[in-house]
Image (cartoon, rainbow, N blue to C red; front, side, top):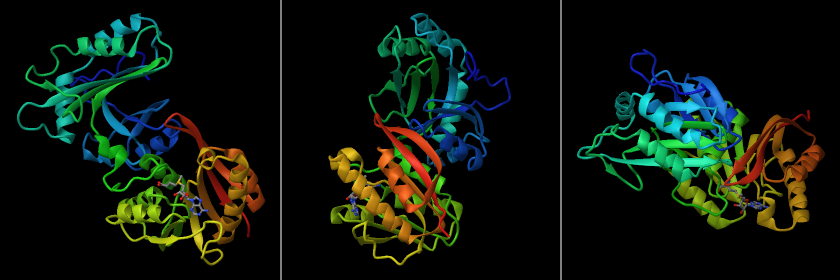
Length: 370
Ligand SMILES: C[S@@+](CC[C@H](N)C(=O)[O-])C[C@H]1O[C@@H](n2cnc3c(N)ncnc32)[C@H](O)[C@@H]1O
């Protein structure tokens, strides 16, 4: 990231940079989506942040699936000092290095200005050991913004028309205008929620890693509320993929009802109540298995987890075609690795992610059996 600010001035003919906030660990997948699907140019990747130039500032930015939020970059730095001197820099960069009027015009291209008096909200996030409080950083941001927003605008606690965020992680800080709203990370299809339901952006990342092709069959044998199936159907629609089948199941009938409700508007998926250790499917009938089985803490007994993963993978091996791919999200990799070795699978990628403060791993496996 630039030492001080990406100067957002109309005078430089380039559009301002954007940045995306992502679940920790998903940065490379989000960078890939920004590059290949959006046609953007990634400039910098930091923890939870991907800075990029987009081909245009328009609603295409809101189509990204692996990002939690997208912003117009006002300024960014990776040289915070952790000392109180940072506050003066935050104030100064916000006040002097940003053409806020221009950024607001671009923001209104994506999110049209409402009639009447718009509302605004300032958000400050901070992690790391700094010699100042999050509140102090927020005040520095507010002071830097003094006189920059029209005086008639009203502050709001939530759902504001315009949001200016300051995100600080260690030495890195980015400040920008939020283009997305909560529907980017929560989606609009999620009607029915379940405990342990997956974050849609994480499911979208797993779908990308699975790299599904035309005429393939995709299976989530423990589909819960159906987030992975939903993201697969949405991705197929966006990319014009013609899948031969999207199959899901769970042993919990309430979970299946939630899946059916969530998938209703997205496309056709077969949903069956089953035990994933004894699938009613022919051998070698599936090309992709994408799933997040229960985490250790959901089962309680670590021994039970090892047994579940062993039986589950023996069955997945039976139904997965040779050269088929499995993408699995777990919190405990060791029992999964032991089970995958037993099934003769070869690991091709691992991504360590952090979910609501809990570490987890997305692992990608290929079935090398002939
Ligand atoms: C972590 S949740 C999956 C969440 C899901 N990806 C979602 O987005 O809602 C794990 C799911 O596995 C199901 N499950 C656990 N053991 C199972 C088994 N032996 N067969 C089928 N489903 C099982 C649970 O009922 C639960 O819905």
